[in-house]
Image 1 (cartoon, rainbow, N blue to C red):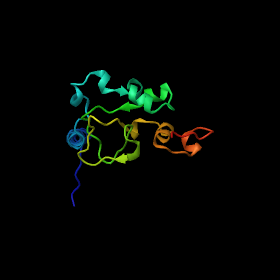
Image 2 (image 1 turned 90 degrees about the vertical axis):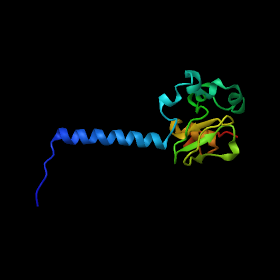
Image 3 (image 1 turned 30 degrees about the horizontal axis):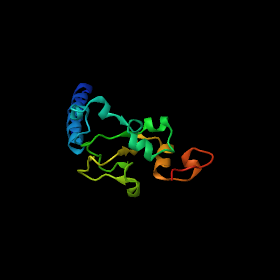
Image 4 (image 1 turned 120 degrees about the horizontal axis):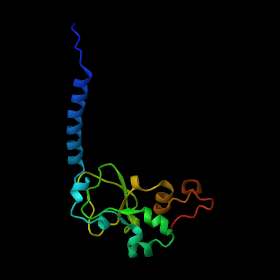
Length: 143
């Protein structure tokens, strides 16, 4: 049995080649998730905070200005990452949901990604009432 010796440079080169393939694959799985895919959108639309949307501010009066500023609404047409969790601030009855392949934001959605929200705030928005999970001594959840 012969042994094959690979130099560090060759191994590093192979790693870089696989990295490019991985990025292409990831891009195929999540269309519109790269900054260049959203180039047509201005900065305000790209990172619209709930704080800037009067309808959201009125729908969630229990949230502070700081909390509303931390909620980033995904722009229309953004592809949702398969298997990731989202919440539509416009449709509380739906609750949190896991995105399937091909899901994207529409004009009637105020989607926020769980991965972009701290847990105490996410729990307040989604109706968790356990004070320990809310990081509040009184356990006041959104109604």
